[in-house]
Image 1 (spheres, one colour):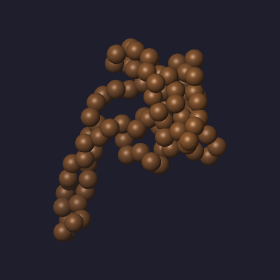
Image 2: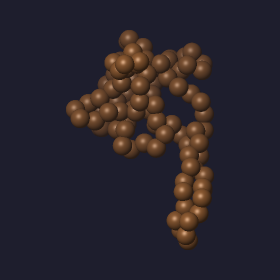
Image 3: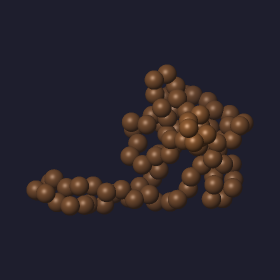
Length: 92
């Protein structure tokens, strides 16, 4: 639990996150083939921690049940190591 009373998942030294699908956009160009890249989320789905999340670790990923805050439905989501994400939700 963090200072905002949100929960997060870790395994060993790694923290895990729900990757957020993104649209890549080209930003400012500096030189040929040297551009800023900007990322916008494809959707606004965010997830809430539930007590009976049935977390399981397999093949470097954590699978949990979480509540979709938009639809109020429980969904199975996969968390991957934080360093493998661009846009992400880390705390729930």
